Length: 109
Length: 143
Figure 1 (spheres, helix red, strand yellow):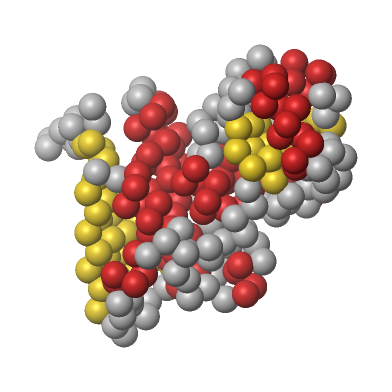
Figure 2: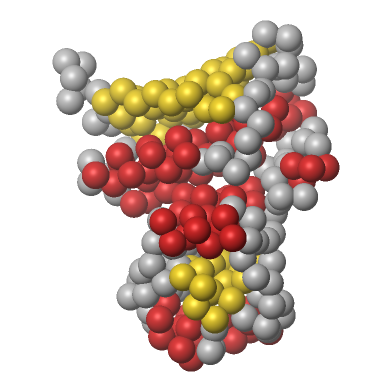
């Protein structure tokens, strides 16, 4: 499933869609950045409540397909700017991390 | 390619500013992409380099990052003139950290940096002298 299809299906807020046609498969939930660097699935979705600018670097270097800010968290302005500059898919939802992960699991494993 | 069939990249990593941490790693990633390397190799290099870069920013007031891209492997050498690591075995333990609360609030300092670097490299060596600095060398093989 592409990130755009994922966003449409789960009615996610699209903060930035740099690569909407990228395929997303699998995922990881976490807020400690080194845990995410070490454990996130390449090409997966990353669910987090962390919203500072470093999220963009981790998303890019860990090569995740998209970041989903859960629990209604809004991106810090520098994060949004960095995602726009680097074409990183940044989404958001009011869902809890648990609920969002449950729905994602049914869709993309 | 230069005479020795390697591409040499080097970066000055600024200390203290976590908002800029990752710039060197991102630059390396872009270069490796242009060279057409396997995405899995690029990801391993990216993780190793980023964790090392973060460590230098947090603990050592910056340092020098050098990356040698060869046909068989990629060697990352990170050199700083920070406080050094008194007990490397302890520093290698997952979850062990000396990072400040201000750093932890940003999501760093979980004590997973060095373990990640070891996990994602094929070989890692740390040389450290307390009060002098630290050099970390990581090798990532190209299959």
